Length: 81
Image 1: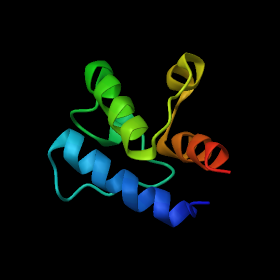
Image 2: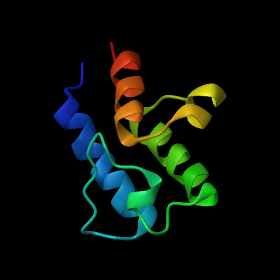
Image 3: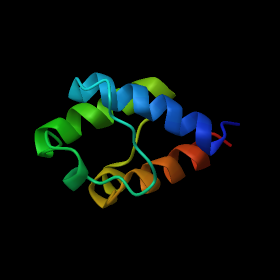
Image 4: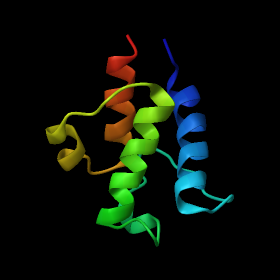
């Protein structure tokens, strides 16, 4: 099972890749408002990249309900059990 820190480290890599910013660091409170290029189009790209990284698929309700990175981490943690 992945620890929260392992998930965050891997998410940092995904976010840096998707948003082409090597300085990005996410935490549980990170939202789309915190990342300049995170719009609805990039959200789809990001979700796909996160799904690929963690070898899982989010349900549509999970994607539309995600308010911050913490919720994303929670779903990944649950699926990783």
